[in-house]
Length: 485
Image 1 (tube, rainbow, N blue to C red):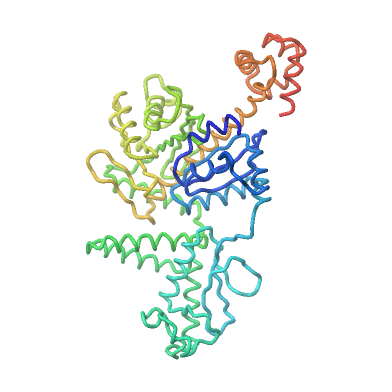
Image 2 (cartoon, rainbow, N blue to C red):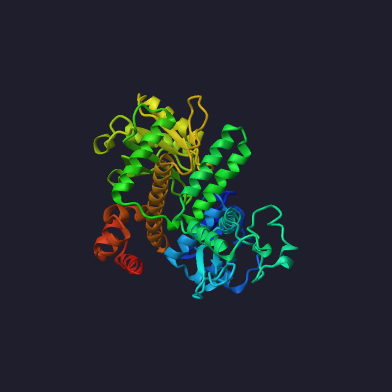
């Protein structure tokens, strides 16, 4: 176990997320997911741990690792799949098994078609929906489609009264009961086609009905049922969202404008916030405490005004203190960003009440009282306020929630990009630590003079020797090592 790994293990949280193992060259060699990052990642390096040969080979190759937290296990599945697809890590390919994600299958050639969950999508003439990383989402969609459209669940090829004897679906009136001749084959097939149209995302009115039902339950005080209906809507949209028609640029602009109008109404602003800033504090690599600021203009991200901040006022992880530092550096006296970026009409802290209070205190400290500031809690994606009002839950399908979660996701993506560049730079610079005769002071002189490892690689041995105060032989060894990077 390297010293980097030992230090990194101390910062692992007891939360779901993904982890990326890197070798000595900084290459990602394995990506994994975990319900509990601390427990899962620590298990690789536990003294006396007995791994199968392939896993042990991976563990022996780990020089460092990084991690990211997510909201829940389902999101960790999606994130893991995305990272593996992007980086194609060696050990994921080597150790992959035959586990596949779930899909729904329906065979129109059957006399009474039904839906089944499968893990292999074949070219067999059947209709497939998926596959999807979240099995609960697939099963929820299957259950809803069967109940709404009366599709049979039984496995019999030709359902008859003997199949009905062991069935509960007709008893609770969720099946059209072809086994008892309660529906003609033509009518059943019409229902089946409607169910397929829904799963293809071509029946958006279904969501309007469910939304109306959810609101009515809320008005009647049936909050638990309303919450279950809300979760059902979310799960169904996850299942069918890939089939929705993509918006044109003009439609995206109109939806974003609607979103900022909805947002203004929801949080009590006098007018729609044309410029929104969102700040994310991140400790993805443990040793690097950074912040990213992204900006939306008229509801859509505007990359011209994105900014990175490397936290300078303290070391270690303290998200509220980091949030306050960003506010002071962005809006405090002498800030050059005041001239380069438009002033925010709304400031969003990606986090809960502590980050929000730290930001508002920093605004008050520098005398700014006219920039509305809110938080966005990750767990339930609720708008966090600290002015005495209760937190706000925006409808999951609202354009307002789309605007702020899209901006939050941009802030997170932008932070990861910054982390990656810092980490890669640290890995490249670490080669100097391995050269006898190059201490911290000489390393700093070389990097200050030549700016980077590639800059050192382009220098002459004489220049390296003169800058660091070392012999020509040592300088030649420096050049040999850095040119291997």
